[in-house]
Length: 105
Ligand code: SF4
Ligand code: SF4
Image (cartoon, rainbow, N blue to C red; front, side, top):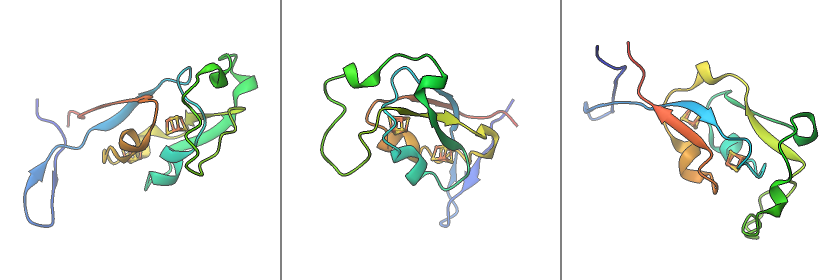
């Protein structure tokens, strides 16, 4: 079985890898993925509603780069089926929270 592929502007075929999981126990709610994603995949939700513990126990989450340090929120997958497989989200995530896979046709 072949996977979904795309074509670059230059005519080169590539294989998108689509978001499969987001580990909310690692997420610090920084919002980088939300701001980077070109689609409507992510949504910030209240950590207290999910019983995930406190991500602020992690000592390297605050790197002073201007993104939110409010760990009361955590990212969720609102509509993973809207993903186009660009993988921009995992490139900006400081905690490597997501996994991606090619999608069989
Ligand atoms: S792979 Fe791209 S489209 Fe899919 S969730 Fe990540 S940033 Fe959004
Ligand atoms: S970039 Fe990573 S740590 Fe930041 S909100 Fe998204 S999933 Fe959570």
